[in-house]
Image (tube, rainbow over all chains, first blue to last red; front, side):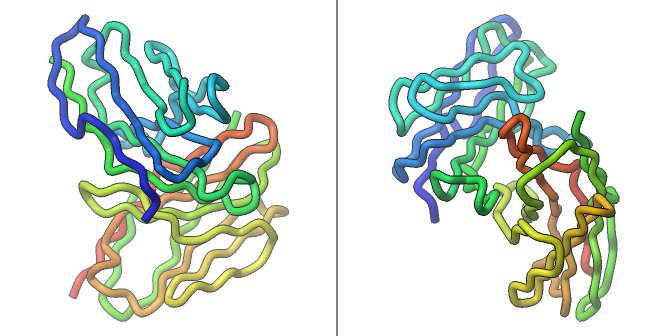
Length: 116
Length: 110
């Protein structure tokens, strides 16, 4: 299995508070992604990174920011959490640097966030 | 925009064959992938079609037809453990992003 871990795995917070989710990989892969998963919506891309300090927006980036200061860590921040951001968040990494060859991602186990 | 449509739910019995379809609207992509996700778990990669045609991996096969904007995942000799959600996904030329379909929940009955 690819070495990818997410923390925290579960978090309950209140509306208006900041939240940071961490994704850590030991595979030295260039591409990292943050998705959210909600019933009826599948997996929706929030942000992704194609290298240290190189990030771009996905389909549902409003209300989220990311940072990648090291190859192994990709942080997702909710500056001021809202109830609509209650979701399961998955981090993923590409299997190989040239991801276009296989389209394969390895996913972390997910972080379940509840915003009250 | 880009969208991938899948049936929301499919049911079948053990030992049967089931096909999960994926129709898409996208301006261009490198290939079509399939992922499996059990309840409470993370998605796991099943297969990838870069070219038109059939790719076989054990009991699972995946098919792509770019001219028809269509693909499918074929599961043979169904087992109870195949009960899960299945997602198709495309890696877009234009945006360099992996976009997922809405998912199909497969329930296998004894």
